[in-house]
Length: 211
Image (cartoon, rainbow, N blue to C red; front, side):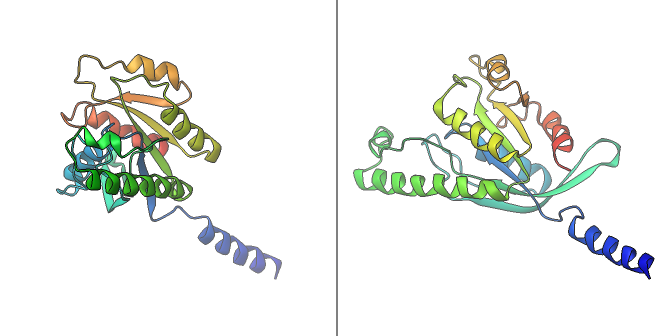
């Protein structure tokens, strides 16, 4: 009788703690770091379609964008399937006047600022459901910004597995070493999402953090 109960509870717990079927991989970072460009690259490589629109105007992505069931295959027959979550750029300050320099009308700028603010709030809320986060940073900029420290601080508090991507390494001003020095507790990988540089290495790194 005891053995039957032990077997029963073993089956129950194995079902509860079995590996998640729907892993959420979130792309986080400041505006214009290249999150959607990376999301599009991943989705194009494995699904043949884009996730979202890219532009030079900050906060082009103002809503959560999800691509489901992306399967990445690696060396030795490895494979992982996840839902890719592209999030709005995190910012500590959003002023509609910043959009006027991009020739948006005052009404368009105010609308964009309002939507961007809402998007930041949603992105932070979604952190609680993430199984792994890729922090995308612009490798040509100083990594010690308030925004970057806020993002990393939120992730550290939640103990979420993290990969830090230094994007835009195809540009002359790129400094991956600065990002490595800023966040030594995480794996840092330099890529160019636009040019596809080191993307294969990025895919392999996902197998290290997604369980």
